[in-house]
Image (cartoon, rainbow, N blue to C red):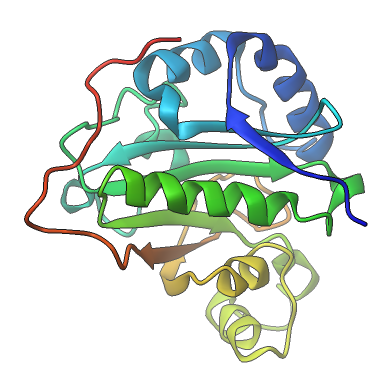
Amino acid sequence: MSPKVIIRNTCVSDIKPLIGLQKKIYPTIPSWREDLLQHQLEVFSQGQLVAEINGQLVGAASSLVVSWNEWEVQHTWQEITARGSFDTHNPHGLTLYAAEVFVNPHLRGSGIGHALYQERRRLCRRLNLKRIIASGRLPGYHHYSDQMPIELYVQKVIWGDIHDPVLSFQLHEGFNYCGIVSGYIPEDEESLGYAALIVWLNPRYNTKKPTLIPEGNIL
């Protein structure tokens, strides 16, 4: 039997363990700063999630709300997250932007990623947001970069000819591929800076009802 995964909102006491876990997963990408994580909680606490198994922190997901019409397909993580501060969070937007998700690599296959994505979908429905948009890493591309351009790599992942640890998972989770983002995280050596723009449409979105995002959050 797989261990039970608990998803809850991030709290201040999670910040240091989260940074430690992130450094282990992404050794070549600059990790979060404590002050920025604290600020994310102040800006939009509902969008910050952690996963636990037997009381141990094993994964996390962070999100903010944006007005997608204000952004272009070509954007960087630094731009759309205001360098990780989430000061670009817009309570009047209709898009839940998935800024980050990571799982303890030793526990992949335990349902942690699915549980985090499922909770994001619940949040999107609960707040009556129109969609979830993300720019997902393509960590498998560095194995193929000397054989094919990024567009062909992604096509082969979609066709099932190549397995990418992130995009293949996201497609399985019901997201649709929308295009390539260049220079999304320049330091991401595995993805060569590329990301796949993906979207999940909320089937319960009601145009006649307002979104339910509080302006201001309580820690």
